[in-house]
Image 1 (tube, rainbow, N blue to C red):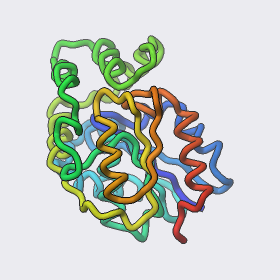
Image 2: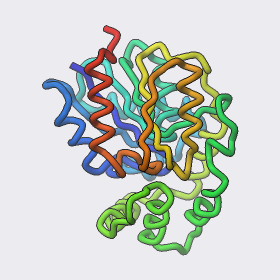
Image 3: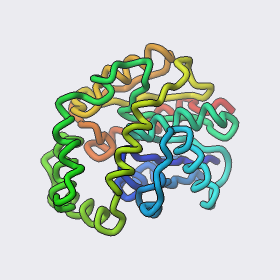
Image 4: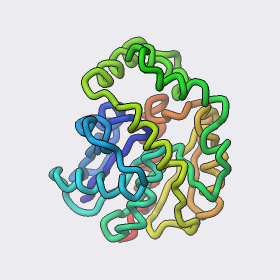
Length: 254
């Protein structure tokens, strides 16, 4: 039995996983659990100040997980900035982490900054910091940037509701951006089984980032041909299938 821990990316929270978490839970073997963890400054922790390093985000995530009922070692499923947190978590505590699935992430030292955050996305990202923008307009803009599906009114409205109930401070967005930009992980392969998932048409983070990680680490990479940065939103069925296939082929070393 294992616990699957889901970690979101920049300024996102547990609720942004939507139906992905229950879909993954349904396809896992009996006895496995799935939980979502908020990072400081988001979700249930929106009033907190974000740590300014990825290592600090790991410590915060581990504290949150410790408060939740769970059994056995954990497997981390993480998107974007969450992927950096997962990589560092596995490095800090390889005995507690049995595996990592890193989705559309990047690492300093393995990819240049213009691939880690594509320049075409800069205007949209700066626009998200405008103080007078409504929550709905902001979430619609995020969806246009991170999803390759037609922008769903229902999803945008739900996400605007999350932003209203747990607003992410602009300062925390900037702190998380800086933490991601500064993060430099060991370029050697993690000590735990790792799967990389990436979107060929990601307009926020270049797919080349995942390709460089896969080459450096010698770990499997699966690339979706059409999805955007928010791969679990655009094609959750594909993501669940890839994760469960990887797990069934012997992801756990113990």
